Image 1 (tube, rainbow, N blue to C red):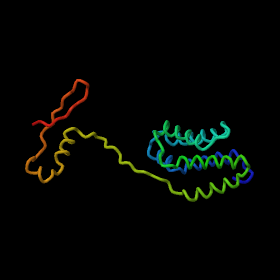
Image 2 (image 1 turned 90 degrees about the vertical axis):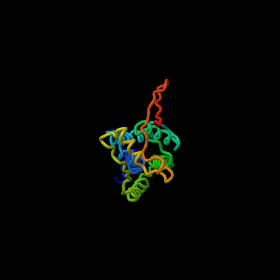
Image 3 (image 1 turned 180 degrees about the vertical axis):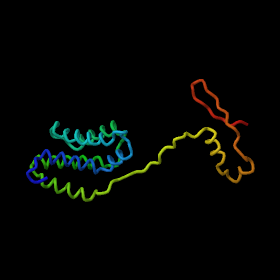
Image 4 (image 1 turned 90 degrees about the horizontal axis):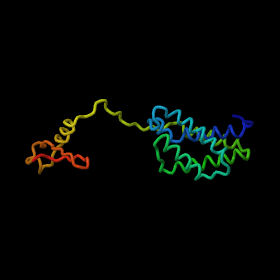
Length: 178
């Protein structure tokens, strides 16, 4: 984008860069917090956050923070408590103000340096769930196979079978058979 690029276009690009390089949103998308359409939700979120600035006058960072927080919660089941959302909101408000005042070149320079710093993506790996659910017998076997303490080693060679009882309130109580 050159110096003649309209302020709105520069700001919308700023929102895109800020949100797409924000580790919270990266992690949410990369790890499927938004479901199968997480990437599309992130792109939609970029668009609605940018429009939010133009549809509301005199926004302050706390309002932007609240808005993005609601979007993250509703679309990605994610809450942010690391302080990065407040920083992100402050950056967006600052860049919006600069664009409104015609300082688009400064915003573009800030975005260029931000893109250089954030060339790597954050990624959290979560082990895939197994296709087969463990049976109760396997779970009991694992619990029984655990190494007993030295005082229990002679007294309890193996775990006794468990007895389950259905209580009146619908709870199931598991007790060891004696």
